[in-house]
Length: 112
Length: 113
Image (cartoon, rainbow over all chains, first blue to last red; front, side, top):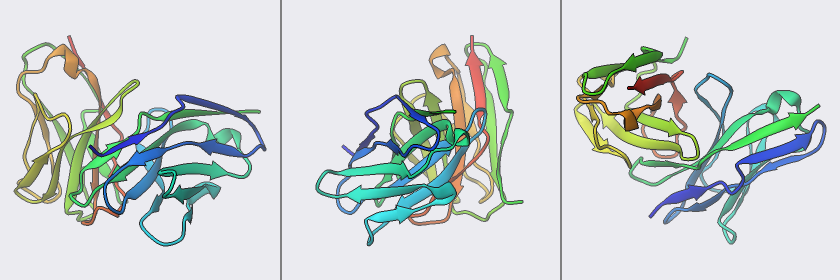
């Protein structure tokens, strides 16, 4: 079965430090992988995606993600965290049939 | 402004009383989908539609119905709501192709007592 896992419910990081939010996937064939962010009382917003090609993907608000096929991971990263990055982050995967699988979400808190 | 709208945003109802949550997008997207978000479970796909008159079940379709009579609208119908359908619901749309990102509505918080 296709699935996406986010092993950490909560990540805390100090402002200015690098941040990583982890995601692993189990999707057959060539995966399409996405990161979305959800701010309180809002819908999800797209951050970035991996389709094929370069394993380092750059997205909105200074975020990037590294696709690692051997470790089946797609971790979200940012070199220097901002307090405004505090939000709920979701990793998602898709298969050819347009059915999507979301992780359980990771709550990121950036401490001033 | 390109957007996905949902109505109502908040709804409290009683067990067994039929309800419809509307979803509309103005981006001419072929694909639309419904999700429910529950603590500890993330988002789970209920139904999706790849075009008008084409709908498919997601992971948790039981107790829900959908229809896609027009490209812009994709209502979610709960014919006999139960308390276990209390949740936060999101509608989303995108252009065709599994590699394209989704645009999400603001959410509908449903409470079934």
